[in-house]
Length: 169
Image (tube, rainbow, N blue to C red; front, side, top):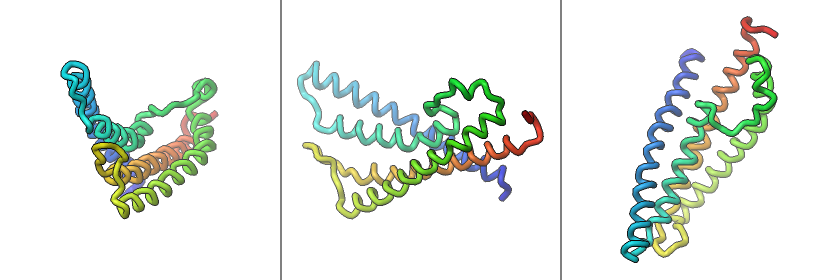
């Protein structure tokens, strides 16, 4: 497999995962509206709405990380880099990518440990309803891995920008 097709494959995976998890906003919204209606109109709050929304939003947040990186949507302080040429911006990104790889690597490592322990203990959310927490914790390393591989794609593309013959400073 050529490097370009591999990069496109990672992009496509994160694109599909991001588009899929975007639909989680629908049940989150429905559950929230239902809970508000039941609580304030019928005085019959649920015991499950908060926990369910917590799990759905957790899945939404962790699985969307790679997609957000793909689309360039993460918070960035580009006050200075916006004025740089694409090549110099890629150099800055490569320098700061060390922080990215360290933090996401730690996230992946610790989330694998946490998910493994959670499955072993059959961990539940400490609430009246008490749903299992381990399915959500299993998604954490998956989301961290998707973010990590999308970061690798960005790193490779930044290298390509730096070493391209076009647009030299």
